[in-house]
Length: 198
Picture 1 (spheres, rainbow, N blue to C red):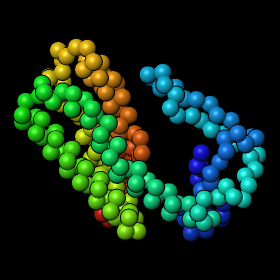
Picture 2: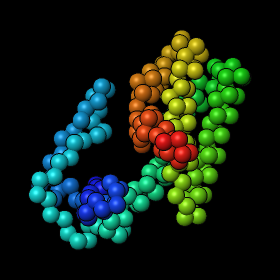
Picture 3: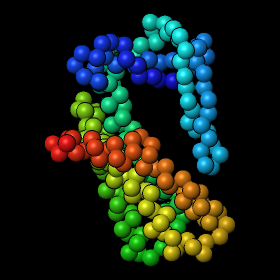
């Protein structure tokens, strides 16, 4: 796993003195306990450390630069296409049943979010740190993908077979879309701070 740990004194603020480490989970002192969700899946775990010693080569990047590294990684994660495409298979499967106005609106929103995602990738490639922009893309993208099954409800209410199963599965996981990669509240806090409103 990759872990972010405090390795220095907190002199200038809570984000200073943090470092990233690549950790072998078979290291003595590490305990992993699965956390089951309502669907019975355990995609997340509680990981605890008890007197764990890491070798020097476990350090990723520079000591004390962990927060900068993490925010760059989060910008990439938050703005990635998977942040707006979780509902896309359902949208594609429902397209033949969907009226032109609804389908056109959903496709237009998907394409706009895709362009925003690509813009963040270009900023990262240029060495910029687009934390604010990535938070906006993630917020808009996950709110959009969470809304897709609801917006297709009238079309899919009478669906059966594979389409009905896809619809039910998407509805079941949709609430998690605005949690992963930072909750909506966290993201909007980043945006507010970036705009000088907080």
